[in-house]
Image 1 (tube, one colour):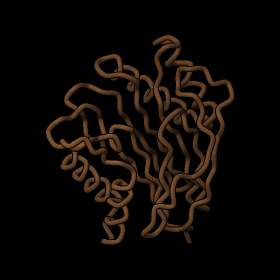
Image 2: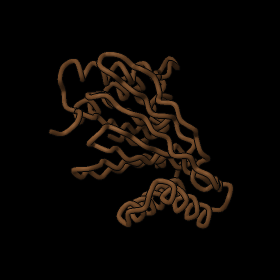
Image 3: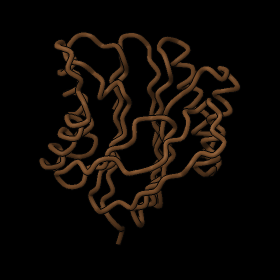
Image 4: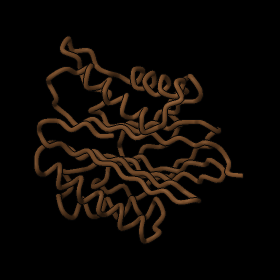
Length: 214
């Protein structure tokens, strides 16, 4: 789910599902306005091209990095995460390009974020991006988000924060709502929290692994 700001920002997300794997991506281009939208669009196009060509995460990262730097120069960048879930065994692999890390929600508890190295944002020339991995348990949920979500402030200046984010996911899970409904409810909570002023896009993507297929 993506809740846009009034001014054009640079959030985008994508996913692809097959029997064997789920591939996900979330991006947040620096700045606002048309340039941010162009960077996000270019990042999405490069990611989809690599994914459809069967490229791995490292190759996809390098392609994204090169195209952003080549088009916008070395002082512009896009943060993001690209990942792949092996649906047979629950192994999730991802590259974090300078982005807020995913949160791991297990049962009715926020476990925290799976540990992993943070590579440079796309466009800043990281020559050795690292692929991180985590073994999920059945019914685990990984929550990806952009900073516009957790930094959304109320009229009194209080940020939405990671705890409210996790609470919304846990509440939807306890009420046995679908993941899509959890995302919708979370966005409603963000909108109600921040009131009228909207300064940045807010994006969330929830990936749930149900367990091994029989």
